[in-house]
Length: 206
Image (tube, rainbow, N blue to C red; front, side, top):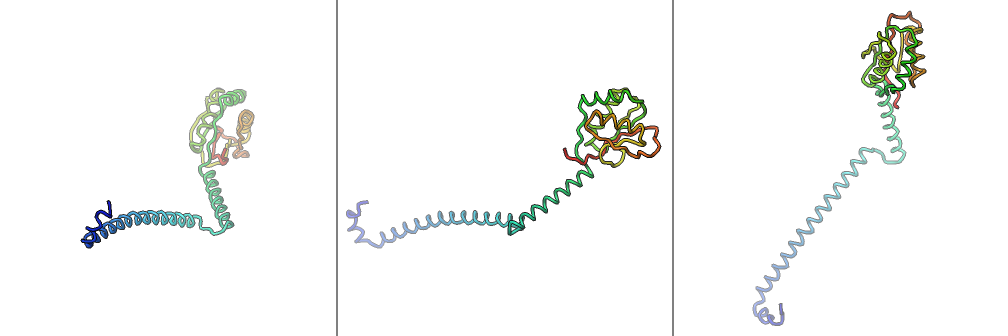
């Protein structure tokens, strides 16, 4: 706008132009206020969120020094170790079944032994595949009296019994052809008509 051209008109009618100018200034101020108040509100919300996250983290950690942090971590690791111990006792870890080569080797060893009734059992699903692979070796060796089932109580590791003679021969055969160790169960009692081979809880995490 050419201000010099319209200046006489403005001088002759100053009030309307002052009102108009004031209205424009008020509008600009209002729009600017809305914009910056929104920016301030957003920044305030982000600051409050960051502060809340900080407080939540501090509450979860509940320490104020590196020494307390180490103590807290040690406590948590202790709790985890205890939980793993409970799991290993009550549930255990998975037993790896015998490989086909190990099954063949065990079957060859078993075929030279006097055959009798043997019941192969497992405590839970984590030992089922291993027990089944033992049973497969007995079947390959021609042990018609070999049966396979779950049950047998709560034991750790692999056990064979009762007695020490027949169960001892099975122990030797398994330990000579597989990576597993067998513990004799009730070795001093009189032998039963059936020897049991039991895959119990595996306490070791492989």
